[in-house]
Image 1: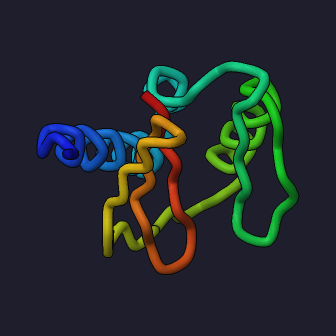
Image 2: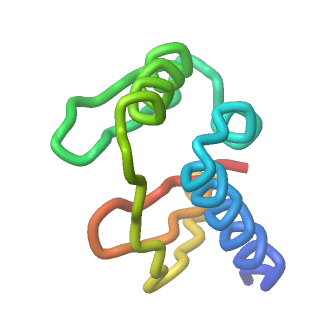
Length: 100
């Protein structure tokens, strides 16, 4: 059975991510993001970025070159996949995948 605190942890991580995003806070992003070589990021309309160095550079570029950052953070469903030992908040457009 899934522990309700797992859902709360997913929601808190997601909220922290979007708070860092909204504040263009790369230091907080670094604290939240998996920094291993298997870390992946796909920005809307972009290609797959692999590894934290590429991902960090992309966020820094977005923060530096974008006048307005606005995103809808409505979460529709949080799913915990015991096979992957990770968390997936399901959203309409871009899911974030959290690993414990």
